[in-house]
Image 1: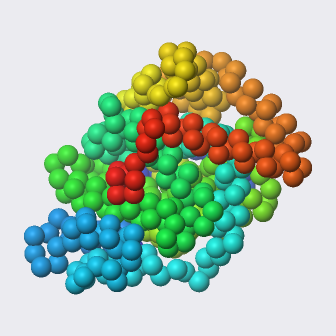
Image 2 (image 1 turned 60 degrees about the horizontal axis):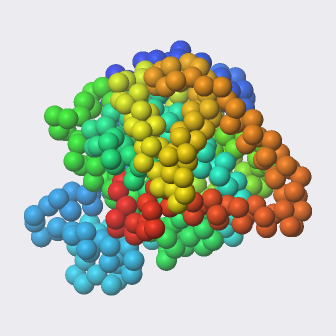
Length: 405
């Protein structure tokens, strides 16, 4: 856990609070926020200047030339086979794995699997929400977007691959038993934690990053905000597309991402069991944000351009044109005209959302209530996952250790 210290927050903090409140009107209503929690907002401001210290210590050791140097080979060996398999493991590596290997008492692996099952059942709608509302929707604020541009991680030819890597991680996390120590979801999550720490170490204090404006490159507040986009925001988004989410689904999905957040190094007090509590936190995150920067439209345009290079087995030009048109149409629902214009995207009619909503009503609220319909949803989900991976990577997907941050 990060120890909170009193420091001046970056200048982005609350720099566009009125805009954030306008964007977050739905969240405020859903979370039943009656008054702004000033203490929570102040903490978000403080934690813009705080890092994951466990990951930071390992990142320093991996950049070190001293006796405590850790190599990527040693990290991968410990990740895949356990820290005991690394001969004479340096202290920073032992400390890191002591942290991630210690399963909290509150973790319920049966509940994690129920959350993963629900996540899988959401099918293509979950992937749509992650891309359109969670990822592209997040481009409306400066900070993380500027870091993505600085790293080159979501611009140019890397865009399609990085989108695929994010989807692969979400797919891996939501497999059965994926979050056990030998599961791919656990291992990819721990790998991502290191990659985040490495990026932070690379940019922190350098000329390419303005800490006084944005806070630390990868900080506690932005990490907690991103976690909320994968959990409660996803649940809210799939509901808006007509997907049936039961109270049991909500509790289980929240538990799944709570453990993911713990592994990534998010502060314990920002790991939520209840969806409404996460929505309330997310609303305060919106209030804490600065305005959009030039990075937002640049990243959004990069994603649109990436649709023109997706892999299709048949009729690739038609498939790419349809995928691009569908994406713009669904973004209109999630971002509204204001959001589309903020990101300099053409405003289209939300025709695709109407079809998705109608199909989900039948699949989830009618057929999905039967055993046959439930099995059908899972078959469709497996097919959609394979399609997503193929469109981003072709016949082969990257292995653990070859996924970027």
